[in-house]
Image 1 (cartoon, rainbow, N blue to C red):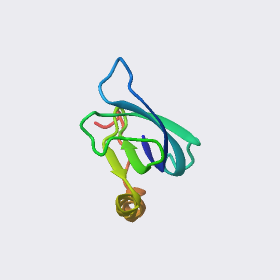
Image 2: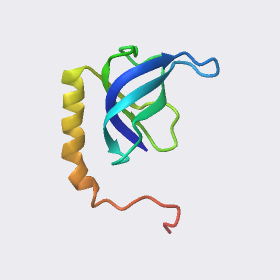
Image 3: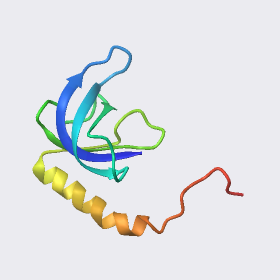
Image 4: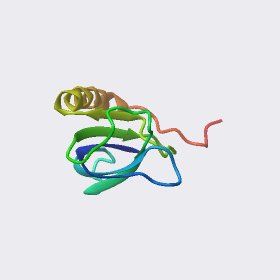
Length: 103
C-alpha cells in the first residue's frame, strides 16, 4: 500500500504499540504513484537503525499491515533499494491484481 522515499521529520513513541511512529516528508512516492507530501507509519522496535529526524530513508508498508516491512536508511542503502524497486516496476505492471473474486 505504501512505498516511499524521504526524510524523517518526526519520531514519536506511542503508548499503544511497541516501536515508533515515524512521520516522513516524501521525496519520491513509488506506491501510490502520486501520494501525499507527508506520511506516517509504525516502525517495529527491532528494526535498525532506529529512526531519527533528518535521516534519508526508503520505507515499505504492505497492504493490510500496520508496521513497515522494509526500512532502508542512508544514501547508499536507499539507492540500492531504489534500484531494486525501479527494476521490478515494469514487470509488476503485467501482474494481475489479487481479488476475492477468484474461483
